[in-house]
Image 1 (spheres, rainbow over the protein chains, first blue to last red):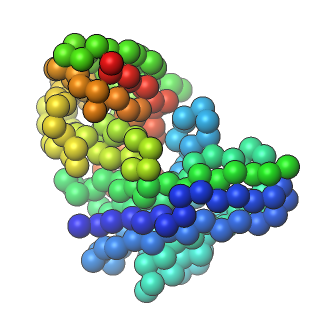
Image 2 (spheres, rainbow over the protein chains, first blue to last red):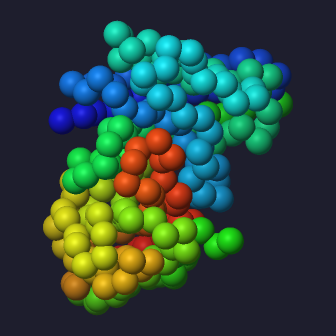
Image 3 (cartoon, rainbow over the protein chains, first blue to last red):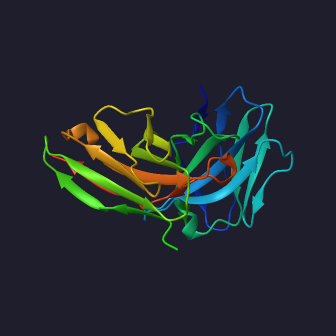
Length: 117
Length: 113
């Protein structure tokens, strides 16, 4: 069964600095998707960034980028120029490529990011 | 463009009471899901549906039932609420292929006393 592990329950970063959140996963599949979701205090789940496993190029979205290491099954999120609005719980998630009964998002336990002014 | 709508947003139940959480999506998604979120445990899948009239158990199904009589709606029922079911519940929907992730509702905070 696929699993997702986030080993950092809490992280802290100074405003304008860079922070990296770690995520590892386990799967026997070769094709899949990986996601980072942000959950601010409003509780809404917001998709931050997505990575297709068959793409070698790391995904980027403005100040957010990932370091995808397929062989190591590692998928870290880097937030550059951190802003107060980045403070949130961040979830790493895995999803199989194709549909069917096993096509579900599997979440890590989350990393709570605090941004210090 | 409403996306995924969950009702209610907050609810307090007494032990033994029953209730139904409602989820509606307007994106014509085939798949729908119910998750619960608890501190330190991330989101865990309760039940899911891959189409109208079909449901399946997820990781933590005990104490819950679901129904999907219409493609756009997915209902989560608690027949006899227990304090262990105090949690935040999220509904989500998606297309059958994996690339687009999920669209989430805004969550329901349920407290069972």
